[in-house]
Amino acid sequence: MSEKVEEKDSFVEEEISEEQEEQVEVVDQEEEIPEVDEVEVLKEKVAELEDQYLRANAEFENMRKRLEKEKMGAVAYANEKFASDMLAIIDALDAASLLKESEDIKPEELFEKVKEGIDLTVEQFKKSFEKHGIEVLDASGEFDPNFHNAVMQVDSEDKESGSILQVFQKGYKIKDRVLRPAMVSIVK
Image 1 (cartoon, rainbow, N blue to C red):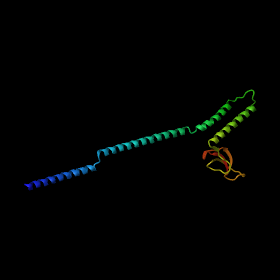
Image 2 (image 1 turned 135 degrees about the horizontal axis):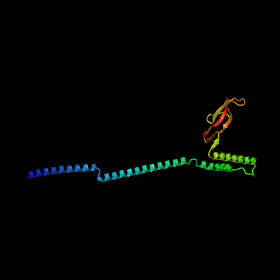
Image 3 (image 1 turned 135 degrees about the vertical axis):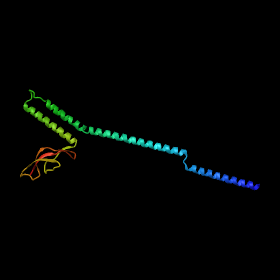
Image 4 (image 1 turned 120 degrees about the vertical axis):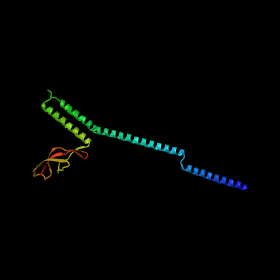
């Protein structure tokens, strides 16, 4: 009988060892699967990063809209300083137009006052132009199609061919850009 007991014991040991091995395998498999806490941590991290992305994107869009608004304002009011400088000139012209001939002023004196007013107005224009980088183009010397518009060609023995003979209308530039070319006649 002892043999039978020994056989049973060995059989039980074999069964126990097989069960233990299965449990060990199950435990090993469980270790490969991330714990629930790790999944939750990763989900929270993804949510946090998504929130940061959305906030950064919203901030970028707000900045873009603000810069676009500022740009539109700058374009709309770009001439504000220039217009402000022109107000003194228009005031001088308005005052000159209100000047009436009175009994105390002779026509010659009136003409002199009007001429003086026009000269002062032209000086104010020149100062305002200079302040804003507007200059008169040089219309002496050789013809340059970048700065001059030839409306006539004239024969002349005094000047060389291609040189400017007469200026009909002054040209102007603002900084390096031509506003209006000078209208000139050139020698054939």
